[in-house]
Picture 1 (cartoon, each protein chain N blue to C red):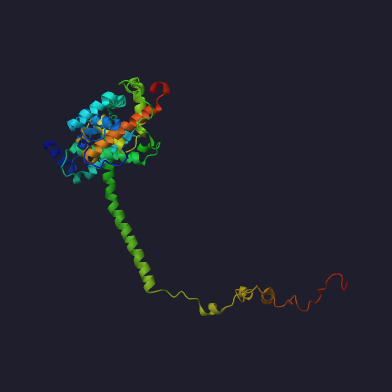
Picture 2 (cartoon, rainbow over the protein chains, first blue to last red):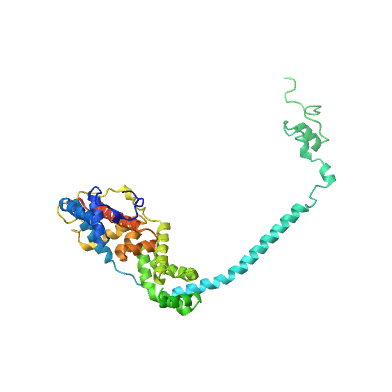
Length: 182
Length: 190
């Protein structure tokens, strides 16, 4: 048998011609013990099988022992004050329900306001362009990278930053390599 | 639905505090018993019973009266406990296919190996094995063997067919037995 549900409506539809086995025998006789109405011929065959197959009788015996034990498991009782705790909790939850509609209304209002603001900004965008003078102003860093893909122009950048200092590659007054012409 | 149920339902729908109290006081022990059994040893049964009643209070407006009030309440309890079982962390249930139908060779004679165990010892073993039985077989077996419902009542509570009830009960018994036999010391199973 698999975990899936049976293919037929009820196991009491088991016919008298089903091949008998320990499993089927146990099934039929356990259903019978539970008061299920079965085909008498199927029951007769199962009983005949059980008389010569102890595994079926032992399984039925164990089923009966387990059923007897499970049915004698004690019932539970609630602890004192259970009813009051349930009713108190009910009242607390009922009060909490009064706050929710107000919060819900506030949340809807905030969402509407946000949506309106976004819609207005998109419809009437503010002038966030740079001042013309500012846009034209060159930044000193631009001299380091006149072309974003070229190597940085250190000499050019230094010329801008320090216009009074001669470039390193040109007349280097006063700068002589140590050791002269050696 | 009988006259008492009709009166109580009407009062509950009207928000009558005395009706709430009457419902809890009348059924609290039966509800806590079934949720404790279905949810098993790891559950706080009073929390689940409390949750059952609160759900019933909230849902009373949707109660159509097609069953007795207690049956409807009982079903809420069973489902609450089953939801708890489904969500809690516990030892994984054994797949029905992972165990053979009989884990050991049964002894000769008519007495099954479990019948020969001392009752208190068997009770402890059965409680532990029940925790490992997978749903929905476990709940079906509990409703039948522990709660004493007929097959038809079990079918109504779980909203399944009679054939499914028969199949689940048989498989649950078979696998419960297999779990217990597998745990028996070798000398007891010989």
